Image (cartoon, rainbow, N blue to C red; front, side, top):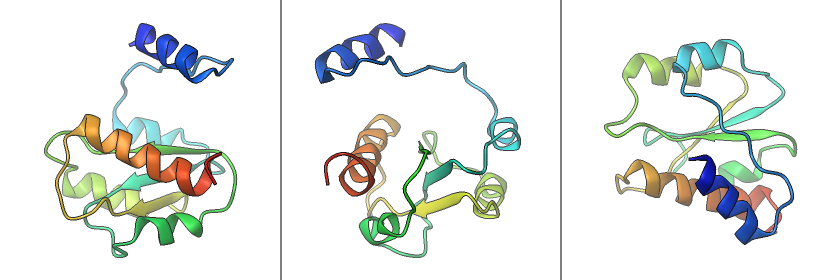
Length: 118
């Protein structure tokens, strides 16, 4: 994974290599989450179907993107996420995507609306 990150950083011309954390349980990650950092949660059950409209409401600042595992989140995981004040739910459209495809699609949306593509 680190080799992929280094190659991607070189290709994009960025000077800082992103940190890759070890996998961790969702409940543990959420318990230690900095609430000042928004968590963009890609949720097929999001109430607003337009992810761009939802992202336009997010204030500038640090954020992260969370996509589900293959097969989706368990109901108790989804309930835990939507109860948190720093979580922003976005819909990714009517199609179920593979996790790797969903990550690219979500990052594209976030970068287009909140990143340096605007």
